Length: 175
Image (cartoon, rainbow, N blue to C red; front, side, top):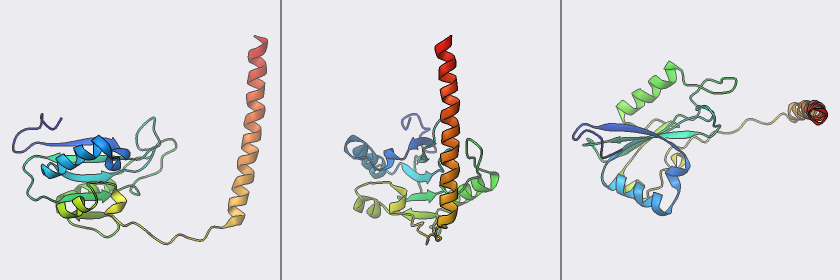
């Protein structure tokens, strides 16, 4: 795909599972060559359940020929989504924030980090977003009464589903 980019001005975005960002061996060597060749422009972490058929979060690797600098922009947009029933989605506001951050190419607290080639090398070319973007926030206290109530509701739902499944299985046996 990189070879097919237009010389001088080509750019490309590739959606990848998060494992591609940090797995070692051959994948690590490929990441290293792409970074040393100054082709990787940005790593954008996306929320979970964004793509049909998978609940796993993904990332977009943005490649660019003839970059203006050697840095790589990391964006953690994993919390930037609107809940959907079966699938989450990005709103225009979320997309605008990602695009504006890419265009500005600056670090933003708890959202984006502009990493130097030295920082990437120090991390063995590991592109795992939390290594670069610190999103840690103190967690709220857990209300155990609410958790216990949810647990009981889930147990009831499971029991109802098991009864329903048993009925289906009996129907299938009689056919």
